[in-house]
Image (cartoon, rainbow, N blue to C red; front, side, top):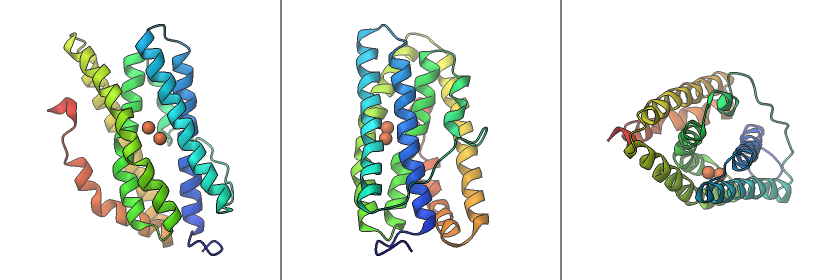
Length: 206
Ligand SMILES: [Fe+2]
Ligand SMILES: [Fe+2]
């Protein structure tokens, strides 16, 4: 356990990974905002970039306050979902890619919030869960409109990235289980609940 805060070495790693991933997401969204010329798209992407940067800030702020050590998180080729952003060919693919990642976040955070022994971490997780809603909503609306316009590719791209995200997520859980100790306990707790997420039909499948 880390100091008096009930945070294990494993949870320190997970929290550092969240912070790094919020920042990575923000940078990707900001880069995309610089490539588009449509008014509402540039506003939405810039807001989304700002929101993810703020989330990274919320994590790093609690990391600093609790004196949690900073761990360098490196994107591992193939293992990291964000690494696959290079496979997106246009704005629709990029938004579908982002949307798929964000869809699991509220579910994942809610399980972590139940699992953690730290009231500080629980508080942050519970604060961030509802903040994903507007992120999911604007991209869903944008993609829905594109589907209505007759772009048949959108659903396929959503399915493709959903499969990729799911595979990587479960690979990570397997790896954590094999690590044993706290990591295995965390992975098992998530696994006990995954049905709740997977059995819920996604909006584009309805
Ligand atoms: Fe976020
Ligand atoms: Fe988000």
